[in-house]
Length: 238
Image (cartoon, rainbow, N blue to C red; front, side, top):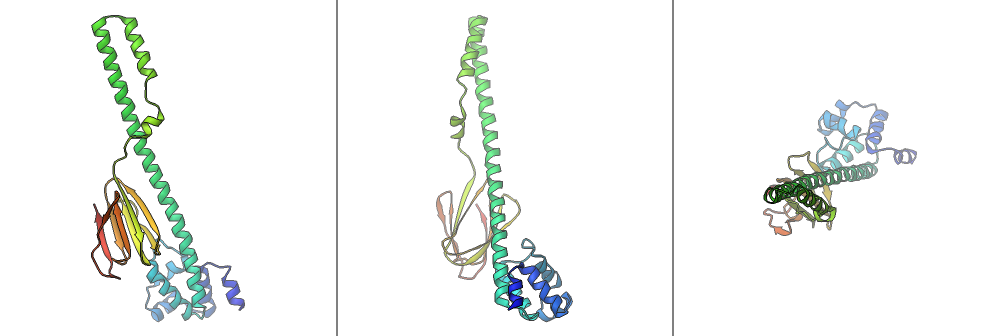
C-alpha cells in the first residue's frame, strides 16, 4: 500500500526505475528477462516518448517491466497513459503553433505581393497620366488618390490560401503518425469520435495503425481507404 501511494507521486519512468533499483536489477538483467532491448528500457525510464515506439507497443513493455520488478502493472500502465496524454497535448499545441506561423507567413507573403502589385500599377497609371497631360500637379494629385485607395487589412485577409486541408476522424481506437510537408513526424493515439486537422502546402505522409480505424477528408472530399481491420496502411497524399 505504501509503495503504491509513493508511486502516485511519481511519473511512470521514475516508478519503473525505482522498482528496478529496489529489486537490485540492472538494465541488462531486464533485457534478458523481457526480451526488450536495453536502449528501449532506458527510454522507458527516461520517458522519451518521441523516441519510443507506438503506444500500443509501449503499454505492453511497461506492464511487463512492472511485473518483472514486482510493481503494480495496472498502476504503471495508468502512469504511462497520463504521461503520454500530456506529451500528446504538448505536441498537438506545438503543431498548432507551427500551423499558425505557417499561415501568418503565407498571409504576409501574399499581402506584400498584393500591395506591391497595387503600388506598381498605381505608379504606372500615374506615369502614364503625367506623360499624356504633362502636368506635374495633376500627377501629384493622382498619387495622393492612389495612396488613399490602398486596400485595408480586411480586404487582404480575404485572399485565398492555397494548399491542402486534411481531416481525420477516428471510428476505432488506433494510432497514427503524420508528416506534413516533410516536417517532423507527429504521433497520435485516437479514440472513436476524435477529429484531427492538418494544413499542408505540398503533401502528407500518413501511417495508420488500422485501415478501418479512421475516415479521411481532403479539402472537404471523402477519401477511401483499402485494407482490413488491424492492418497498418501508409498513405502519401495527394
